[in-house]
Length: 213
Image (tube, rainbow, N blue to C red; front, side):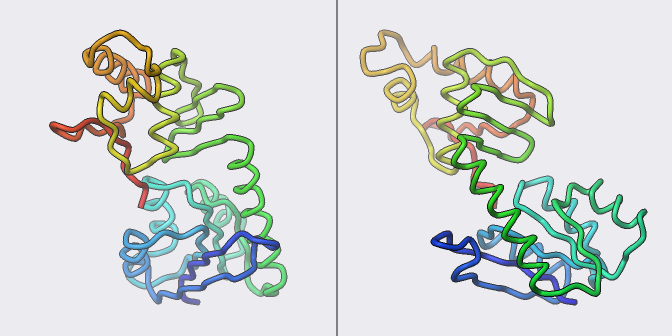
């Protein structure tokens, strides 16, 4: 079975107005993944060039996009390996299209619920806006109020470059009295606490977190 990417438009139904893209091998799938944005991936394990396990592992190094494995491999070991690669679900053949669509809908519903509840994910980072909590690789990271607000701003605006003046205005507030060295200090501390190198310095401009894809 070909690798399948599924994109949806959220309206009255999570599965309404879906757009489906098919790719015949893992290598091509990875290439297209880096060129376009997708909401969910249906992934066969027995793919030519790069198998589905490897594709899943490579994507997980960059993105938390939902992944469902569809495969004829129905042994317990094969399923455990799929979940070890951080797949969200595992469906074995033969299966009904109705069942697959229900699984897709359930995962997208959870993703939508996370977004509405103020949960923002980026690679190994999970931020809960309502709980004021940040975890990296499942481990909670203690941030100051300003560090949390800086990270939240970056995660909600991935790819956008913020100048130091932007950060002073948006995080500290217009009445903040200080200089840009204070911004540099907080960015340095935030990077150290997260211990993942995702906050990029754009020389002569400011800082950003890159888009996932």
